Every structure is written in structure tokens, then in C-alpha cells.
Image (cartoon, rainbow, N blue to C red; front, side, top):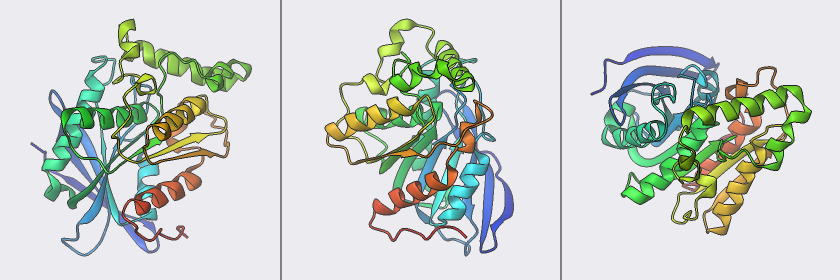
Length: 293
């Protein structure tokens, strides 16, 4: 059951007002905190696209505040969709597969609770950043394998997809101190999330190693030039393309992050927002919205 919604209205840009609601959604084993983002329109207006978003934090940390600014910008750039950001069980509480079971359960909850989300139910997309992008990617596998919910797209931002940390961009990180720290953060996150070494090859933990990537929804995969997760993101995109999945892979310009855990600032936010708006619009032949002023 969803708890009582707490609404806040803020002006994001001169022409856009943003409304947020604090909600409870249903996870695999209990309620989870969530936040709904939408523009302020005429009462009763419902959006055709719902994006369910999962935060980063390397599986062991993070919460709804992690990507709050980014998600506010996302909705303000294209008011035609609504975004639901959800927590999930952190590995410090329960390791794999608790987080991804939560993520899949949230998608099922969203599909059943359209009215609470001001959503028509037409198009459901899953998205995330870093560890949350791993969960988003895996949710598409789970939805396919379990018969739902039907997903219209996946948006993976700097995704963690390789527990082995074997990519060239990851191995190159020790040559730069702050990037080496980023690699260490990823390694520590996987140790917490996947304490059982055998799980590291499970497709629901490491989608990059999955041999079954057909019949998945269209994908937008964003990497960054100077991020250690760059190569695994692009390798996953190549595998999806080879399996016939409509996939757009973009390497965004480098913008050094002073905090290695600050991927939620989305180093190249302006570029990422434009790519996401174009991707969502392309799914239904909509006109791509103009850049925000």
C-alpha cells in the first residue's frame, strides 16, 4: 500500500513548475521509499511515459537524494513524462539478489498503480545510474524471463555491468589518483553486493556476461570519456546491437568530478538530458523537445 503522499511544488525554470510526491512503493519483501517527479499541468493530466529510476551508490549506499537534482532537470526539460525514483535494499542490509528483486517488484507495482502516478500506462521505461543502471538493465532481463511488465525502453547511465572489473578503462584507472579511487569504490561495492563469488557470473548480477540478450527493449547507454565504467557500457551496447536490440550508445565529453561518488551529478548533464529526451521521443515518433533555456 502506498503511504500518504507529501507534495512539494517548485519552479524549476520560468516556464516550468515541478511537483514532487513522497510515496511508498512495494518492494520484493516490503515497502520502499520513492519520489514522483512531474511538471505542474492542468488537473487530471496524465502522461504517456513513466520512467522508473534507480539511484547509484555502488549497491552499498545511496538514497533518493542522490539523483534528485538530475531528475528535476530531466522532467523540467521534457514535461511530457513522469519519473518515479525508488529506493531498493542496499547490500549492507541484504546482498544480491535483494536489490534487483526490489527493482523488478517496483516496476510491477508501478504498472498496477497507474492512477497514483498520473500515468496512462502506455509506456514504461526503466533507468538508472551506476549501480542503479545495473538494476535497470537486469530488470529488462527479468521482465522478459518472467512475463512482464512490458518495458518500452531502458536508459543506462554510466552502468556498473562487470563485477570482474576487467575492462580496459577500469584497468587504466590506477594511473590517475581520483579515478583509481573510483575503481576502488566499484570493487568495494561488488564485494558487498556479491559476497558469494559464484554469483558474479549470474546474468542478473552481471548482464554484460549474459548470453541471452535477445527480446529486450530499446536501449540508450551513456558513458563518459573519463569514467572507469566507460568500456563496459560500450561493450554492453555492442552486445545488444549484435542481438538485434535497437541501441544508442553515446560517449559523453569528459568533465572531471571532484568527488568519485558524484556520478549522480551526471558529469555531462546537459548532454545526457538531451540524449534522454531524444531517446524517449523516438520511441513513439514524438517531436524532440527544444533545449531548455
